Image (cartoon, rainbow, N blue to C red):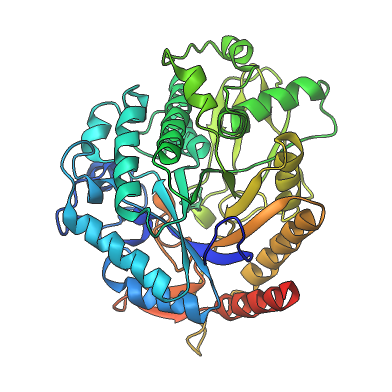
Length: 472
Ligand code: BGP
């Protein structure tokens, strides 16, 4: 694609290593925290794992070819740390390096720009045993791993992301307790975990610059703009608290090169005290990103705290449960319900306009940074029709609306440079298992992992070509 500072708009799709690769113990790969969790924990409530998944490890050529045929010119994927360094720190596994070399080369041969995330939730098990992201040494270990990836792949990979969704990841690990190691309502860990992830990100960004590569490096945030129930009595405070809780621990270090100035005051209210690195002021200052990746699914709709206890909820059982997403973050704020907004089967709001408000919020408050929409998707139960086709009209309609809102933000001045639909094909949806599907391509998990483009794959191909014609 040439110069990353002068690219056409990127249209692609995204996956993550543990969710699609399979080959969990092949060719020298080390054990991952998710391998261990899924093989041993009774909290693996859907009783499935990523051992095989869609077997991208062996079928990447077919998948990349389908991206190309679908008009996509970029692919966002992540590297498995334990495939590259089986014990997290130490010896490099050359077979793991070879695999990613094959994937990167295959992308380039097909005219697909690789956008590579260094870490997407799948921690090497040995590091999980050392306390994982609560261990303050993690930032240095991550930076060593990142440098190896830059050295081995940086000649061809020009778009890098450090960490995926440090906020949502920490929320699941430390508050919801649905990602390993399943801590619940642990606000202290929730904050420390995000701090350590963002310090790791900053060190990797700094290292990338020092190594003199000509690409760009960013971080990926689950951008959920804070919106207030109109009945909120203390709108300024509630906005500040909720925004700190959901966004600021990520966006302030990434885009402003510092921890949020309001951090100490709010952490005191939450009874949290962070273990900080003595040099973090300089580390964050030198670790500002070139772009921010936003994964847009929903907003953070909130109101005043009404006195309830700390509580969080999610629905990982889909249609068989009535639970909806929500939180009460005593004593700061709590989720509000908007009866005008429909929810999906997993209890999450469906509101495509949050694409516009999320982008504009970041654009206006963080000095107009370069933005990629690194994920946007719609999860659903799906069955092929008699003709063998998945007629995913809901996905087409909703994602079409999300994309319209993205284009509106772009017209209003936001520097959006690419869009990645989640996901390239059906894959393992973390604790939601395999029944929740997001893919442009259907995977028949019962029948030799056969791949079939869905109706949305054709729609996306035509949409890309329409926008490319307009771009000229
Ligand atoms: C994002 C993650 C992805 C993906 C997606 C859908 O938070 O970065 O890995 O899984 O959400 O979420 P889920 O699969 O839980 O429905």
